Image (cartoon, rainbow, N blue to C red; front, side, top):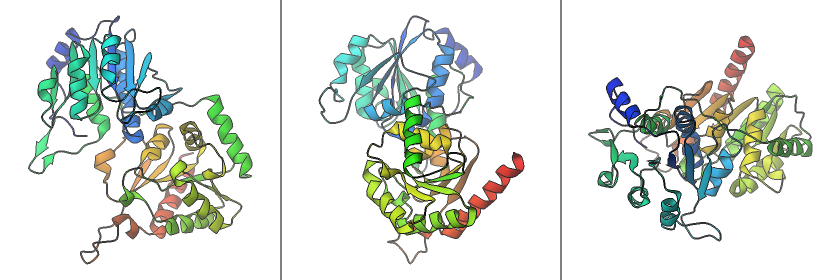
Amino acid sequence: MTTPTGLPSNSAKEQATAKSTSPQSKIGVLMPSWIGDACMATPALHALRQTFPDAELVGLMRPVIAEMLADGPTPFDQQILFEKKSRPGLATRWGLVPLVRQARLDTFVLLTNSFWSAMLAKLSGARRTVGYARDGRGWLLSEPVPAARDTHGYVRSSPVDCYLELVQRLGCEGSDRQMRLGISPADERSADSLWHLLDFDIGHPTLVINSNAATDDGRVWPASRVLELSQTVAEQLGWQVLLHCGRGERQVANDIAMRANHPRIGSMGAVDDLPLGLTKAVMRRAHMVVTTDSGPRHIATAMGRTVLTLYGTTTPDWTRTYNVPEIEIVAPDVPSSDTLTPRIHHLGVARVFGEIQRTSQRLKTAA
């Protein structure tokens, strides 16, 4: 996602407010496809609800995004679920057209940059369609927002700012960058069951380690480093260590826990079901989280946890959340002679453990 050329001036905001959505109108929001991006969209959703408390918010999203947003502080009044590929009971992208037209949206905000989403907006029947004017799609939108460019192409910036800029075009105030998620009592009970299964003490400090990435292996910290860090934390700090995983990473997390063979090191993969609600509850009760730049990192920051983020192929500017406290640990540059080893593999355990110790001490001092 790219940042626009700048925030609206006061006069631009006044004009946007003057033609803003009436309390009875319907605002459609096409949510990002990925968990991390959807987390970073929650400040924009909050701004919409604060500005238009009586408007009907209609969210278009993948089921996994709906699962993550469940029980959150800014619920949609209506959800339209879809997937890229055909699945029973779900619309495909192009199957959204009649559903969106039936929704009779007055305003449609696109939190994605794809051409197909702009075409969907064009066909939606909405009077106002707002999104970024990039990749040749500006002509499809009633209010295309310029995206900043430099000599290298589109300027990369935090999606938090980009999403807020889009809703500012509707007259929303965009200074609150706090990400927000919620959890249900059932999510908490699932975490209780996991703690019981692992013989963890809910009152004892727990470090959650997430070394997964859905789309980029270059973001993944090696399992050997995760194992070494887990053992170091359990033995030197006496903390519990929980290895976070989804369905696709279950075996890796379970193998690390088995190799550690330590009573204070366990895998989330020990339970059969791994819903996103469990991830939210696990992150909420963590004392600290060490994570790669991936979806669970954003869930942890939205839950207000102390997060240490390991960066490999990405940099903090690309996905900055503005949530504090968050410690950014950027992997060192790869030697020019090494073109095969991912950059994150050059990030050592000693450096990460040192940051854990320093952060823990700061938390104790501030308490």
